[in-house]
Image (tube, rainbow, N blue to C red; front, side, top):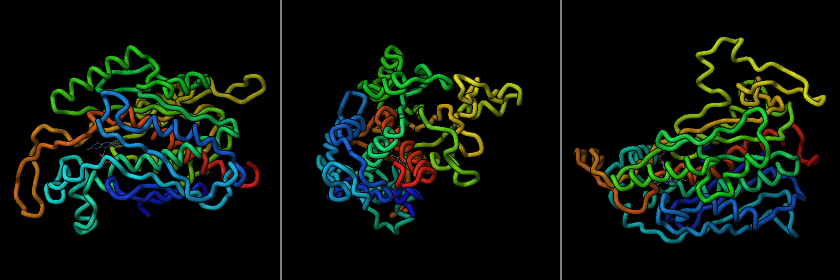
Length: 365
Ligand SMILES: Cc1cc2nc3c(=O)[nH]c(=O)nc-3n(C[C@H](O)[C@H](O)[C@H](O)COP(=O)(O)O)c2cc1C
């Protein structure tokens, strides 16, 4: 099911970038949950383009219109549907891609998969724009989790080789977790952020793009959430994070670094702190056997450089079956990482809400 996700907190995302609208239906919500619509809007604005020079010049309003499932300020428990109208579309920019494949984009694979019937305008259903409804669902999930004392936050960990400070995986506090989300350019170290912006601008001037890494964490998650084998927290987070366009890698806790360690270095020793079971280190990223251990859940997602660049690139006209070249004009992000930060938060919140509803049930919210 390509655009449906979830066992408990189920989302179905619909629409194309230059169609009438995009949106999401969320099924499986507890009833009676108050939703702060202003907070949802603010969260979605963090993803919206055109906020600064490092993002595309497109002006998308990203204003969600709730159609159902919300009444008298609370969720009804029946499907919650939100629609976001599309505007500021320049569909003619995309006409060539129905036959000439943009390297790194889904024009060729989409055409093969859908027999050429897919909507190529603005990237169609493959567009980064489809992360707007994901953010709506994530904002709802975040409010749900907040009621249980669970907070989710993220920041840019790296862009073009420039690193931000890292989250402290053992004693991450709410202020640090949420601080980047309050900034225009979501980093912990503002100076590092300036250097990242310079790198993005340099890439843009060179008609190129850059990628990077988003670090995300959840705190306040009690031990015991998640299930073994295929129902683990890692599985759920991974399957939804890989639904975000341009994600190419994911690591939990110490991630790939664990492969080079001895067990004695990598194991997180258990300890007691104020009568609570904790671990002294958190290489596991808060997850053991697919189940939360009460420590912060920490993961990082790697984003590739934006595929659409205005530099000339070699490609194929797959209708004419001829080699050709392409220079992509139009309004593209020279780096998607900054805008992807709330998207990763949204994906994590949905995955964690899904796992929490499985354990707590709908009635105990
Ligand atoms: C928030 C966001 C914005 C994006 N904006 C663009 C863009 O302006 N131009 C572009 O070519 N790709 C953009 N992408 C990435 C493409 O949508 C993505 O690379 C493409 O659909 C192919 O999918 P894949 O990279 O996951 O294989 C964006 C991704 C995200 C998450």
